[in-house]
Image 1: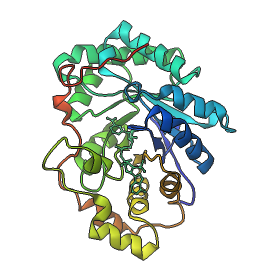
Image 2: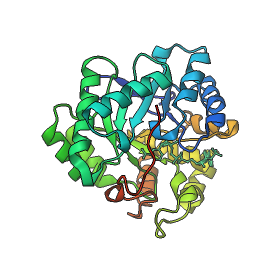
Image 3: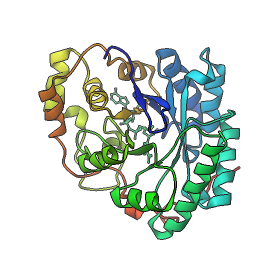
Length: 297
Ligand SMILES: NC(=O)c1ccc[n+]([C@@H]2O[C@H](COP(=O)([O-])OP(=O)(O)OC[C@H]3O[C@@H](n4cnc5c(N)ncnc54)[C@H](OP(=O)(O)O)[C@@H]3O)[C@@H](O)[C@H]2O)c1
């Protein structure tokens, strides 16, 4: 694997396996970061209505020399928009902010256990947008097996993607097995363990996978960095990874992973670092009471 491979989604849409995230990138930082990413070679950008930077993502794509059709753009519906009509409105709002005719991948950002019926209605709005071409693939984020199965029992389209926390300290193997069973692609947020550095959602989260001796030793062996070793592990596992950076050096570093290969034993050694402890919020805890903000038109 000497270049960024594509993952074929369950409706045959091709998604670049290594993408670029912009969570916690301020609007001021986002245009430059996305422009640098596109020049570097990234062709997959992950944003969300809740990141408040869809406008800047759209501007950077428009200003680039790369055709819109060659860039895979993901955005997400925030929970304050859940429901059918409000969901359709949210999709149109994201299209307008991104200044694009279509979204490549549209995700529900979170399951909301306390009003799962509205979560279902929101997904049906995404299904409608898929049917009329406003989006090319639909999926979810932060769903566990139970929520996925509940959703699939009440809707028509199997999610193409579930975007969840995955890194060497939280590998989510049982959930990845669920995805494999249903033909859902696994997309890793915080792929290099960012949430364990910037987050304080759980006191149990173990520190930084970038400093773990297993990772550091592999980095030394291949003359790569710890982040490059971890990103390579994702891609060799068939996991889509969307590392975030606003630093040009790290943006380039995170893309430079297609000139070495981990052995099967090394991939398994990284898998074995799993602690079972997530760094991010428990999906069961997400509700309009915990996140009170709304997305402005
Ligand atoms: N669906 C969801 O609920 C959800 C939740 C979280 C994230 N996401 C998505 O996933 C993307 C990535 O996740 P994330 O931002 O949480 O974590 P991440 O990509 O694992 O880590 C990002 C953090 O690590 C730093 N960093 C980047 N490259 C580095 C390198 N090579 N060496 C050392 N540090 C490095 C970044 O700082 P600098 O910017 O200063 O380089 C940033 O603080 C997000 O941007 C977003 O698109 C989705």
